[in-house]
Image (cartoon, rainbow over all chains, first blue to last red; front, side, top):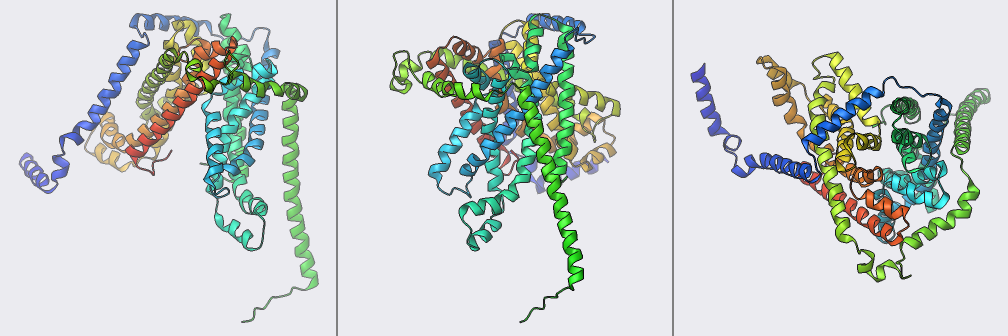
Length: 282
Length: 294
């Protein structure tokens, strides 16, 4: 048994030299990358003041906090919380819809097959990128300066930051659309507007509808946090209860958020299947 | 060549036409109904979110003029006329940005490592026991549904102000998000190598190490890089709740109305996010070829 194996390896070595005798650079590349990654990690831990004593002190503190969270209890403020949750859902729905409405025409300008001139497409894309590069929370702070504290600022913040994301996604969907329909309409003498209305939109609308529903889902999550900077919704309540250390209320609010997100996930999943069919959902 | 078009008798045609109209009518009705429900939901939401169009129109000027103000220096000139004055604090800001990047790097790496350890238990085809899979899945779900900044708020109280809270919050959120994606990759992996290794009498651990991991590492690295991009953005706002990074400076500048500082810090954030996006995109292309999924 052992003898046969030894013979086999020698023969294999001769037959596949590149598998057994890889150059040192190829063999060392992976370990070197791993070592470099962990070296930066260690440097980061030191630079960010990760002392073990602080870490374990914090962990025990965290243990206490979790103990105090049990059982979750809204106290007497359940109606306020339900209203705040409704506010959050409203912010997500309105913000996403507004963003989609404004992003659709702009995304046409950013699509290669609609606007062939790079001169126009390039600035539109960079503007969309810049809007996307700024976090929703920052937009919320800007809008609070404009329309004051409250959920309205949240709606506008979500609308603006999603506008950037939708512009990119929609234009990608439009670029992936089949050009044959558009050519057919051009051949029958349709104007560019006809090409978009009858050639492109029927192809991309289901894709877009799926994306919008998905964003309503993920924006329910974003909408729960923009309250932390004062833009309305359940995040406002959450941040307040954390600041005054009412841990039972905090855990109740977190549970509410989890349940709401799960419910929205479920509903929008069903709707997405109904609109675009099971196989198109990526 | 002649083509024959068969002409149906009047009676049959009428029946077919009626059926067609009915089918179209039903579809139209369903669409209209859907639109009506959606509009009603929007209206309800508008009431719930206290939308006030008059406020918007009255103050919309503020939105435009806000950008006008943040693009103006204290001496009334446009910011780009005196770049040195505009970016006066660049040393401090770059340092904070470096901290932001470090927070997201350390957070992503810790999160990816934890997700790597957990995902084999969460995947349907590799999990050793159903109850374990259920527990791990719920755990990951919890970690990614609670927003990172909520974790940060709680951690700031437990661990004190500073980047440590931010790192841990990002690590937990990344564990949840990456754990799900990783386990989906594992579920798509080919199970034949696993069977081959199991047939030699190997343990579960060796099966994972020699049969599954070689198949999935490229996908893991690609998703981890994508997560790093997202986390840079998230780390830029961690400072809002006192969890370190450039967000701290930004929120102070916005709250104290240091207008030109706001635009300068925003500029540095946007440029950093661009650079990270482009370089990770390039890295993904180099490592996994152009066709690697984004």
